[in-house]
Every structure is written in C-alpha cells, then in structure tokens.
Length: 556
Image (cartoon, rainbow, N blue to C red; front, side, top):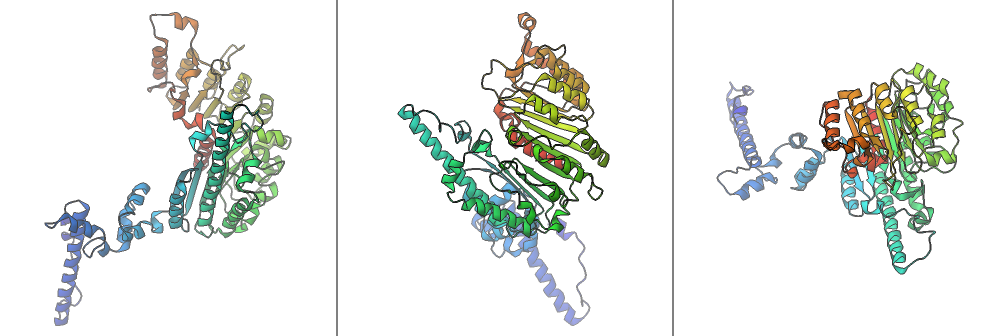
C-alpha cells in the first residue's frame, strides 16, 4: 500500500469554503473506503486473508462488496490481460462476474484452436465460439482426426477385397463405423465454426486447416462414405453457403487461408467477396481442396481484383501463365511470397501445359526482387519435376514427400545448381514400409547429391532426410561444409548407413564417432532422430507444410 500512499494527493475542490470542507470530508471518506476494498482484494489474491476466516477471503474474491465486484470491469479486464489464454479459460470458471469480464472482446483479439475430430470436442468448441466467434479478429482452426484411425487404412480399404474370415468382416465393419463417425463429427465441427462467425464484421485473418489426408485414399474421398453421412448433400451445401456468407459480410478481411479442407471452397466462393475487400486482401491461400476435374478455385480474371496481394498459395496446376502475367501488371503490388502445392492427384487430372515458363518467372522477379517460392511435392515423377523446376524460379524452400515415387539424385543435383542463391530449406521424405531397402541418391555418381547441395547452397539452414540412405561420412561432410549456418539437421536413425571399413574398426565406435564429428562440424550438440513420431515434418507432412506456409507468408 506504500505505492498508493506515496502518490501526491490533489487538493479537493472548494476546500477553503465551509461547504467545501464538507465535500473534503466526503471525498476523503470515499477514498479511504476504496483503499480498504483494494487492500482486501490484494490480500485475497496473495492468499493471505485478514484476521477473519479463509471463507471470508474466498467470498471477497468471488464478488462480494469488498472484493473484485467493487472494482471497475475495465480494471479487471486489464489485470487478466496478462494471463495466457489457457489460464483465462480456467479463471472463467470461478464466478459469473469473472466469466463476464474474461470474455471481453479486448482479451481475445486472436483465437488459435487445434481440434481432434472427436465428439468430445464439440461442446467445448460450441462454448468457445459462442463467446468469441462474433468479435474475434484473427481465427485459426486446425482439424485433426484421431490417431487410431490413421493406422487402420482408408475409407476404401477392404471395399474391393474378398470376404475372408468372419473376424475380418467384423473388423471391416467396425472400421467402416468409425470412419462414418469421423466424417459426421468433422462436418458438425466445421458447421459450428462457420455459424459462430457468419456475422463477424471484425474478422481480419481467417485460416482453416482440415487434415483430410486420413479421410482420403490416394487423394480422393470415398463418395460412398460421404453419401452415407450426408445423403442429400444438405450439410455440404450449408457449409459452402456459410463460407460464402462470411466472405460477403466481411469488412476488414486481410488474410484468407483454407487448406486441405473437405468440400468447403467452390470455384464460385470468391465471387461473393466484395470488391472493396478483394482490393485490400494481402494473403490468399487455397490448397488441395479436392476440386474434381479441371475446375480451379480461382481464375486469372478473378485474381485481377486482388491488386494488393503480397502472398499467394495455390495448387501448382492452378497457377497458370496467365496468372503470372496478371501479377506482373503495373496496378498490382509486388508479390513477395508464393507457395505452390504439387500433388500427383492434380497432375493426373490437370495438365502442366499452362504453367508459367522461364520468361514468366523472370518477369515476376523483375516486378519483385524479393519474391520467394515454397514448393511442396507429393509423389511427383522425376520427368514432371524436370518440367516444373524452371531455372528462374526464386526457390527458397522445397519439400518432397513420397509414398510410391522416389526422388532421383539428378533432381537433387539440379536443385543445388539452379537455386544455390536462394535455397534455405530442403526436406526429403520417403514414407516406405520396407526399411531394408532405402534408395541411395549417390548410386552411380562420383559425389553424393546431398553433399553437393550443402556445398553449393550457401544459405541452406534446414536439411531433413528420412527414407533415403545417408552415408555417415557424407553426413559429416555436410556438417563441416555448412557449419553453424545449418541450424537444423534432422536425419532419422534408420536412414544412416556406415561403410564396411567403419564397422570393421573395433577401436572406434562408429555411432559415437558420427555424433561427435557432426556435433563438432555444426558447433552444437547433434543426435540422429530416434523417434520419428516426435517430428511433424515426417509424420504429418500436410500439417507441417501448412504451418510452414503460414509462417513463410507472415515473414514479409
């Protein structure tokens, strides 16, 4: 209390008159009462109640006359603004007065939610969105299916197989029931989010991620399962209409991102966005939304409205030469971040003939010298990658994720030669089942392509490898070439192999020597990745790419 008493007190008005003297007495009495109330509140917060019982202290905290209720709501809101979001939610269960103050709009300018697609999440989501959905300015929601489903196959598993034993039939029926429950819950959670923000005119950043990779098999959703959950398509239509209504009602939207979602964005969705909002939009991301055939979510004509776009993320097959020409127009601000998703399902159904050529990329670079590109490639053949990787692309990050088609050493060598001035992140992932035969990129080559990559790309700061053979002596060479500039070096233990000479030397432990030499080269402690499940870059490539794309776009 010394802090309050040491502050010089202002002279009460009218203190020299007789009437003023009475005012002074009342003023001092009121101030003394306020100080006593504040003293009781502070003692209660410290857990040291006065000479009375602890029960009185708890009553003061829960809003009695001498407690928190006597303080202005603005002051309570300011006090709780220093708490992190999880602690605010716990504090809201104390009493109704605190709950009212803790869900004041100023305390929740942004909301980032990661949801399991589980019925248990629905009541929590409904409560939170009911409280915050109508005023939140930044909303980022990620959906993730239960882990026990990811190892059980896809919706189409067992659909075309023989009947087999009775036990297999029961297991298949149980799996089918679980998939139906996941799809049904997924649609309900998406509806809950969209309904709560349909009239939010303060929304500035809106981001949705749906991990539908477990709801898919080989890139396409089983329409049989979706028709069972939503027979007449009413929920899907309602979701699409709500999304368009959110766009049409927006007044401050600057950031719109929708990736790996199921049946939410259509080719006509962006037409509902007012011109005034489209002209001021700074980031637009529409990734792998399961659009059938040759349909695209945005055309070059539609892109002309987004004159202030600084960051863009699209399916590579949707980014045409005409779009590149639109982005180089004088009425468009320079584009600084471009993220492209190359998926084998899109390449199979869409042509690569309309993609930008090398001259288009040169024009984009002339328009914006700070343009950087991030490419994620899912199971792309080497001949297709040779068409995609134009020499003038300012490629800063590239992520290969393979299940069937492996990346060749020639592709890695091409990347190290063409993008040595830009490349900072290189991820090489091969999710094979048979760990006894990892492909070796250095086969029939004088030098290992990964070593050449580390030597040529002087800005390389992240290198992650799984599912490809990395020889121990090459790993040591990479660490020595890049040194402390290589901030992240993630290589799984099963990917590392040793020469016969290293294994035959009984005086030196090859594993200990590898750890010591790599740590010495990097200038920091290093270990191979023992548990692949601990890193999302290997286990959840969709989610990792989406999060990296977000940070890549925000870092302008």
